[in-house]
Image (cartoon, rainbow, N blue to C red):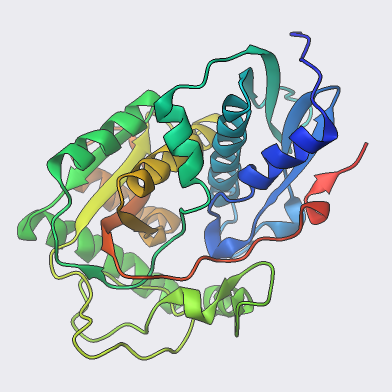
Length: 323
């Protein structure tokens, strides 16, 4: 095993502070962190799994993968190279990743830009402006996914977007009819922004309107502003991996976070539409619509965002396992 460099407690906490800015389904934050001999461990927190929305742990592993990418980026910003091990101990299935600082590293401008984007990134559930996403930004999104061993299909144009939107709407209808799913969703909806987890109603965006192309989860009951129509011609991104093992899902989370930070660095906004991934039948419909043998792992809407509301995070003391 590689011997890690010494990591101070302050540096460890700084890494965790960056890691927890990752996204998670319903902002459930299903992670815990340990500093074990200088190596940073990312553990799944079973108490924060969503038993109805995420019975297999897919969403929790996506979230922990995204947190792992942030942690790696934070180490890089500190001038430390790190070895990243996914599922390093088969006998410990809750240990999802281990990051081992190994040597000094000269941070690149691209890494610095992505690290700076961590604090600015959040799921923007507000309407987007009708301005198109620049082609160069679309290329960067696809390259960001490939850099982490994933793929990203960039979808635009009325016919293509309508085909995918129909799948998203079908999945959302299935979930909306599931009373247990809706009860769990409402349990993670917060009335204001003072809570440290869940989705505050202000962050949930306005309620959906008849004719909206893409459905949104009912996190709140804020009425839409007149004239603030939702994305008549959005850019959609479908992110996926070759397989769907726990390791593939962790890699998908890592790639997702690189993509989201790339979007943020480009001055754009994004929100996630995971409904077609949560419903197995519609996930397969999505795969076939893309004419792929591989596995879709997330759908994103991307555009130029109006001002939105970041979701809160728990205190570091709540997510760190002290030695």
